Image (cartoon, rainbow, N blue to C red; front, side, top):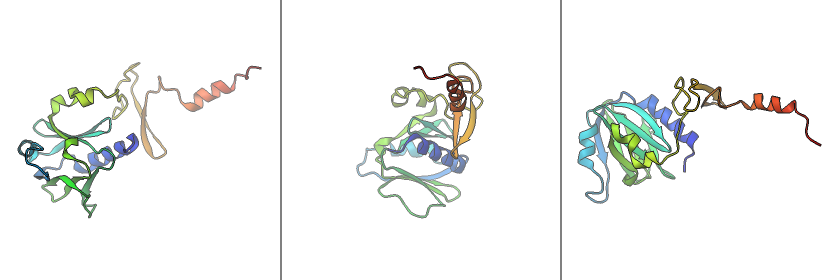
Length: 186
């Protein structure tokens, strides 16, 4: 299963690459009729642009104009590929969004049971999202800390963006320097 850093990186890449793109055609590849609300999905997203990409736990949420969202969990090996730049296709394609500019976002190697169409207003109250523990620092630079209300800051650590509360989360350096002044007990 992808770890949170990888899920966060994919979210940022999706945000950079697909926000503002308008879906022209939705392709859904199902083995049985009635397995997925194809007509509702097409009605909800065809002709509409993606306005925001978010993450809830290890799920990616694509918000569309008109008030609908797609919630996608990639499970162990799922892939979301944008072409271009990718020229290949994932195995076992289940969903493809073809954009008006000709680019395609293709979901493969995961079943449609892990793709959910919701109204944007209900995403945060959807039971699989509600049961997640809080993700208080994701995408929250400048937002108040949920503990002390100090604005959240963002720094690069090892090439990755990290969000933290400068008041509640003491840095390793400052905590270790205060510990080093204490002598070990005998």
